[in-house]
Each structure stands twice: as C-alpha cells, then as structure tokens.
Image 1 (cartoon, one colour):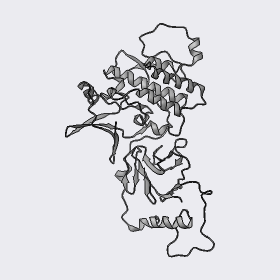
Image 2: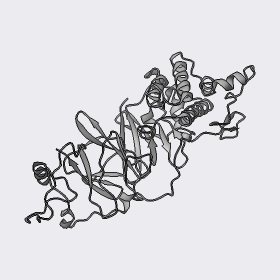
Image 3: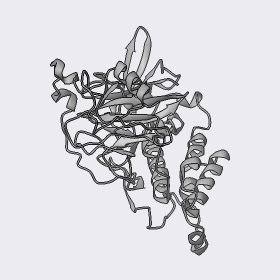
Image 4: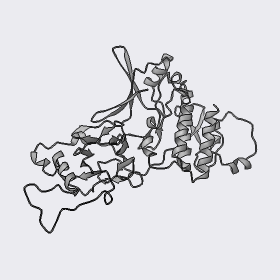
Length: 393
C-alpha cells in the first residue's frame, strides 16, 4: 500500500490512492458519517474513477518518531496494547472489522493534546494484509527495553499469541498480568466482561463506552507524553513574511563558499570574509576528521539564541523537548519532536515529523514523512529558526 503525505498551510493529510478494496458499502459510510473514537478521520475523494482515502493527521505525531530513540518500557507497552484493545472493542460496536486496521507504527499517530493513539482504518484491507499485528510486535521486540524483565516477558508472550492466531482482546490483556499476580488469583470462570481484571499499576478502572451503551470498557490510556502547552494557534506559515531584501543572503554561504571551505579545511560559524585578509591574530582554524567526526552540520543562521546542530548518531531527532530530541531548538515555534535527519545509501535525508509550524527547505514547505535529500548549502527553517546545511569533508 502506497501512502503519501500532503501538507497545506493549515492541514496535514495521509492519503491512500486507489484504495477501493472490496468491502461492504456500509463500512465506508460508517467511517464517513461517524467520528469513531480511536480512528483517524477519513474522507473519500474520487476522480476519473479512482478513489483516494484522505486521513486528517493535522497536529498528530507518528508513533514511529516517538519510539525511534526511546526504548519501549513497561508503561509504554501497556498503553500501546490497551489502545489497540480499546479501538478493537470500539470497532465491534460499529460493526467494523478489526483486521482492516493498519498495524504499522508509521501509521499510528498520537494526539499531542490527549496523549492517546489514533489508528488508520482502510475498509477491505483484511484481504490485502496478513499477520499485520505479528509484524507490529516484531518491531516492538526490536525497540523494547531488554533490561526490563516484565517488558521482555510480556513482549514475547504477545508475539507468540499473534503467531498462534490467539491475539484476542482478553488474551492480549492477560499477557500484561505479572506471573506472581496470576499465581495469587483464584481461577474464575470466563465472564462476559470485556477485559480481564487487571492490576492497578498501569491499568485503570472500567467506564462506559461513549454513546451510553450497556457495553463496559475501561478508560483509554494515553501514551506517555511530557506536559506542554497545546493552545490552538495559527500556523507560522500564515504569519510569516518572507524578506525580499537581497541583504538577507549576506550571512549565507554559497556552494562556492562551501567548496572553498572544503579546500582549506575551515568549518567555522561564519564564512570566510570576502575581499578582506584574515587578521593575523585570528588565523584560519584547521580541523582534521579525527577532530570533527561529524559528517554533517546545521549552521544556525537565525537571530535568536540557538546553536549549531551537530548530528552524531542517526536517526537524529530535532525538537524543543529534552529527552525526546537529540538536537534542541528552544524556540516556541518548534514542536516537541519537529523533524529528523537519517542516513540511507550514503546520503543524509531530512523528514518532518508533522510539526505544528512546518519545516521549510529552500523556501518550500516539506510534507511530513517525505524524505528530502540534503545538499550542500541547503537552507532549512524549523518553525521560524533558520539553518544552513554544511556537509563536512
């Protein structure tokens, strides 16, 4: 399935082209006419007999970014499983098939205001995918904290349940019960209750499903998220006015400047002065690759208090929140996790994390989840903070 991402000044969408899989027509109508808890809002756009599903991901952060640098521990695993169980139970209420969910962390999104996960539902997908949840837990096993016995045990039990085709709601929740708690519990006959009784640590009590039905479920658990202001605000693109004055380029290096820097080995904060001799008290500094192991640097060109970004490990996450980002930009216009730089095929790529105020490359707005190959002297704006790419020799 080919996912594409489209971004305007105010909205972001994840699109699936030619997604008209065979399914009961009521499923599509159910999605279009109801705001189903736990699912991304969807609309259908048809042109020349080809249907596209458009999913609104405005203001949402992909789970793939949130787990790229941070190990999945016990709390995160409980919340992920709980969100999956909650949405599957909700789908039963709306007569929708849980096998039509996409079990891929790249298509799981977190609502930054509530911390809860939202899933992508593609009607008729069950005929096109196999073992979707099994592949998800394969990824989870790679990213989980292997120093935590609880997480390791539960992770492998969940994987084995998926491999055996026994990953029902009750079976998945039982994987989160600690062995000592299972031993202390008296055996009970199966009840009609939606979830097995769970320990207070990490799991909450039951409450009614929205809509007032007699079905009982428990309160949804939110993915761990640091406190942050989420007041509605206009996007920076709607407020930003580009300078037309040629003098704005005075502090930026051209590709020729970078070529000159490469020849003399100089990678300072400022470009070499033009038509001026370097003062003897400030000779050109030479750096060897041993002294500068980084192959890429983002040189700060703004007028604030930010610093150059010097990626050393990849993926390199850029944002304003300690613990979530590797390269910190403290400006208010920058999101908690704003973008990332990663390596592939010997090149460096930039990818926006569906940030609130966007990422611009050479004046163009970069759609989220769209990989842009970085080149020498590229000018990048995160929110309203400007940088320039320097590829080191």
